[in-house]
Image (cartoon, rainbow, N blue to C red):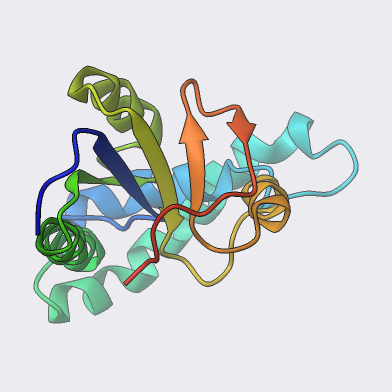
Length: 168
């Protein structure tokens, strides 16, 4: 199959997970600082202290779970494998595509990954959330686009209904 002249970028979004035992507490802090996770009237006033309390307490309780599965979450490794498989499948279908992984609560953080993606000279970008429970703001954007995979234009503020690729 002939390659297209357009270069496609695909960003697979994931929540992330602590990659080491030392990363458990800061990961949990990032998670519980999210207004989509802790949301109640005037939550912005107490969210960070509450996130610190929960992450400190919870990190001690779950550390042994992560230790039994190798000392960290495998989610980034699995998502990177999915990205490589998707990239290979798209190449088999004749698309010049590059797939990236971005995490909401741990490395590589979405903001830094999207900043790096700008340098890849893609003419089209697609976002593919790889999470079952999509945060409220992302869910709203996805619902207007017709599905789980949608086109993104930098700085990722505009969405449209066309779906250019099927997520694998």
